[in-house]
Length: 356
Image 1 (tube, helix red, strand yellow):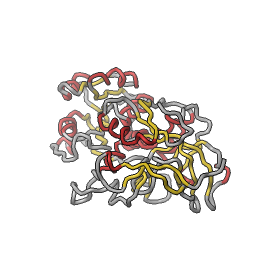
Image 2 (cartoon, helix red, strand yellow):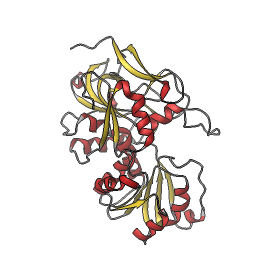
Image 3 (spheres, helix red, strand yellow):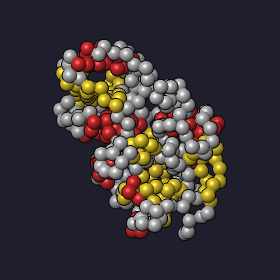
Image 4 (cartoon, helix red, strand yellow):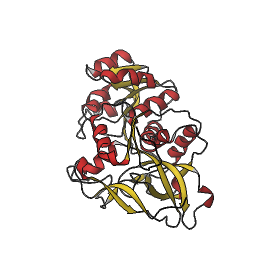
């Protein structure tokens, strides 16, 4: 079957609520030199979809400014960073043997060539993403996972959530035998952190609440801290000698209260601000104990290569909470914002994909 001329896509033309998501018919993009065209089987949702749509990232010197991930959004923009699918065409200078291969797309736009480049842009924000039947990507950023036993839905959950988690763990230098604290443990990144940290041989303390606690424990947490009760008191009881590494997507008051709980040389890694971006803490607890606060935005190419190796061997088992057809993208984002689920939400853009 050839590639059609047009496709369905969900895009935004301005910042706002779920109502700004529009299902429309657009031209199928043509892969440029060094690019491939991927038929999207599944695309996972992330908090970055919500914040990009809302323009919630702010700008240096103006934290309240409407902005995308790293600056103003070029509208219209097709959302969606996390793509699993199949290569159906290649542009000039791209490897033709990729056609027909099952792939996961690394959604990062990097600042340089090389294995340790930093992400400075994101598919679905700085370039069009996977809320569509087809998407283009750099041939260097598609990873062949044809042999992986994971489903397309599971593979789609990996790039942002598991990539962010692995980036945090690598930058935090988590080692086997260390005690790690995971915040927001029932979310996509949180579940990924719990699974990967447990696989690394760490003792995992995870913060969650209510009916999600059992699911977080099932994901691999050794102890679950109930967010509805005094968090610091529970952490002290569970880890009286302190925390080696905190993997934090919440920030806010948790940083203020949690930094004194780090052991000597402890590392506090931040990759989100669900609890608030304006943080105050006693800096003496930092320098007197040789502690570190580390910012972590997504992953490097090296981190993503490690993640794809895990996927090929199915050493992680992503949790898919629910799936939605493309025309229910707004409903899916509303469900994501409610945070009542454990794991990831996935869209099926094409008529060939099953829906729930």
